[in-house]
Length: 113
Length: 113
Image (cartoon, rainbow over all chains, first blue to last red; front, side, top):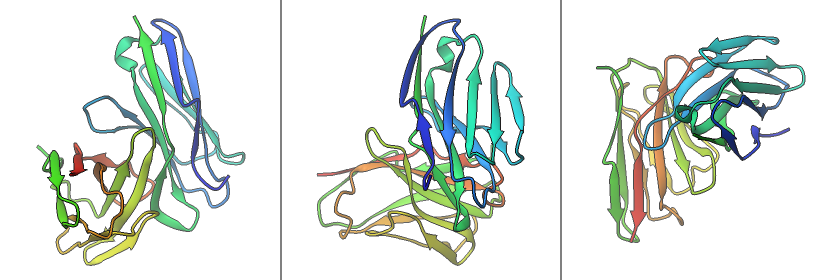
């Protein structure tokens, strides 16, 4: 994997459903993996910054795991609510430059009441 | 309140003209970034700066220029050489690069008429 990739591109779930999506990134020369939430008409906001293999972070109903050896991270949302509707972005520094932060294309989540 | 301010929010430019987008932060962050978003695509890195008087090209720097004369300011100039300048531009900053979360401005939507 040369770039940061995310799947699925979009997701529609019913309120109360749990959901998850994936971020894939280059596993060599790994520095960090970021997750952001971008709500319509707002600025992206950081959810997590993860640096260690096996890391698991949690914020309310949202959690994330990290596997640096195979180059993927999962974001989980438990009991989705309409206010969770947003685009979820992951980002990682480029292999060649620590400060060059590259974003994936995002997963657009719509939670239907 | 600390944060990042981008101005203007909307900008219209005639084809062939240069235009400068402002980005100011009062978070005392060393690193600053410019990203571009096109419909249906993720954030693509234009330029980044780790320290005053130094900046690096991102993945799509052609047709853009930046300066970093002050820590708090990182203006982006869209030149007439940029073939498809109509896009949404986001500025971000972070304390010390890739393993710290980035903070984003509200964005500037540039339209070439």
